[in-house]
Image (tube, rainbow, N blue to C red; front, top):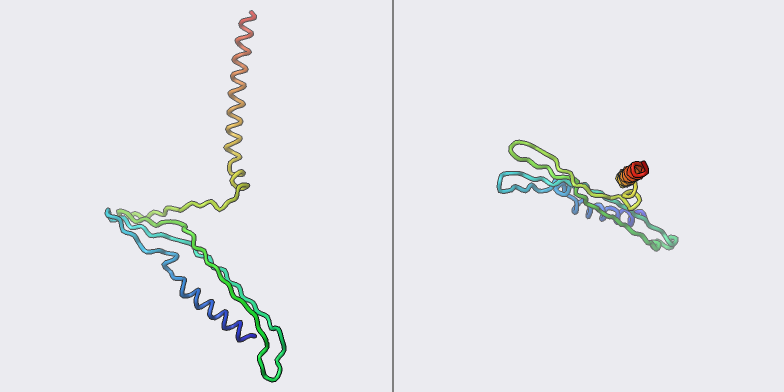
Length: 139
């Protein structure tokens, strides 16, 4: 069993090494007509798992049954662009929201409070103006 799992893991790691390259993180430079150089920067995440099981016992020198599996996943996320122009270097971040609806709602709370406060202030001013008009009409 140890040899089979070891072979599967080695084959998977070899395949991951073949797929990954430094150009996945720091991409190929792009040169614009005006001489500006743009270099993409990404984040690479790799996950890996393996497992196996021995189903029987060795009998008469025959290897036991074996079942196993190996899996991996890779995710490449753009992070930023390095921009080199006229001797200046700038980093332009790529903003991606990985937040869910609840996080988005929490982010919007200050804006919602401001809008509600503004509406209440307008209503108070309107009510105060109407109250002043009614008082002057009564006098």
